[in-house]
Length: 209
Image (cartoon, helix red, strand yellow):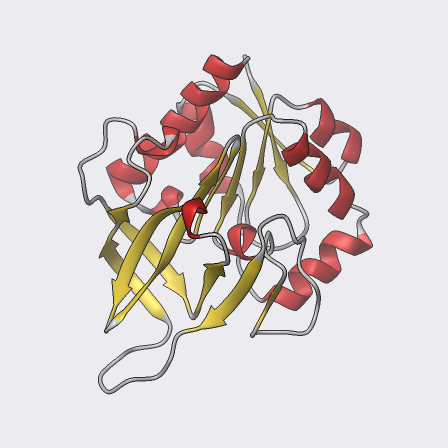
């Protein structure tokens, strides 16, 4: 059974993601061990909270290089929420440098009349990479669950895998590049569509291995 390392750096409740991966037929292990991360068949980088503490926690546990190495190795990699944002160069939320895996910045939603920040609740994805493995057997515009005030702004538009519209702002909601996929929303809170995405990630892992 495929082992998926869930990177533990004290930024979020990992239980529901674990459950979803178990139900999809994988063996998730919650770990902050570089050796276990590099030995796993796939890696999931979760995250809830703020950009600077996330980067500080990663660095204090010497996990920055193992995460980058896991991505560079070509093994399936999935970032969720803050785990998407810290892949970028930096954030308007803080001062710490990000992992710099994807060139670009994390930006705050601009205030506009009637717009609620954070963007919180259910919204529909607009798929920009229809063939991304995560989207297999999903409807064209799946509903997913968001909680965020900041969004990623990649320099290379080709990495955008999905966008979402909040007020008048259409922003990146997911990215995809080779083995690397990452989403701003919470698949584990996104009912049938979200659990199907976790299924699809495990299927992708089995196809790669």
